[in-house]
Image 1 (tube, one colour):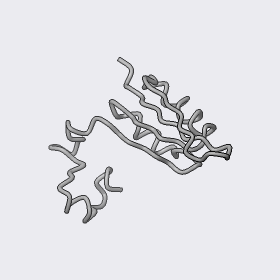
Image 2 (cartoon, one colour; image 1 turned 45 degrees about the vertical axis):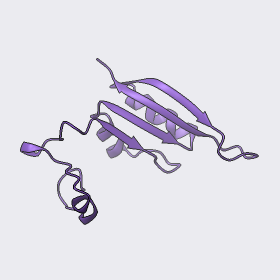
Image 3 (cartoon, helix red, strand yellow; image 1 turned 90 degrees about the vertical axis):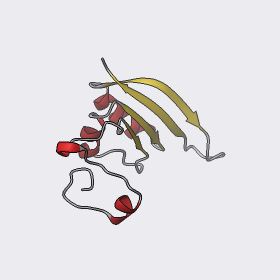
Image 4 (cartoon, helix red, strand yellow; image 1 turned 180 degrees about the vertical axis):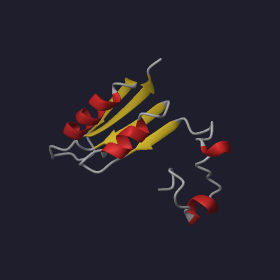
Length: 104
């Protein structure tokens, strides 16, 4: 809602964060999107939004939904970095970090 401009949020305003540039477009300073979705991964709306950014930094706790989301984002982006983190020793859970860059 904040990104689409349909609603203003006090925390963003108090922090001086402007999600809309002149003419209603994205400010030039907003080129990277950081996402850390729940185990269900990104929903369709968030995947479409992510596809519009130059760079996406994606942290995931579910390899299956990460793979699904990366498959869709691969139409617009390439994986440039990938890391796995064992933040939950003695469990089967694995945290992954991926950096995607817009294809040229």
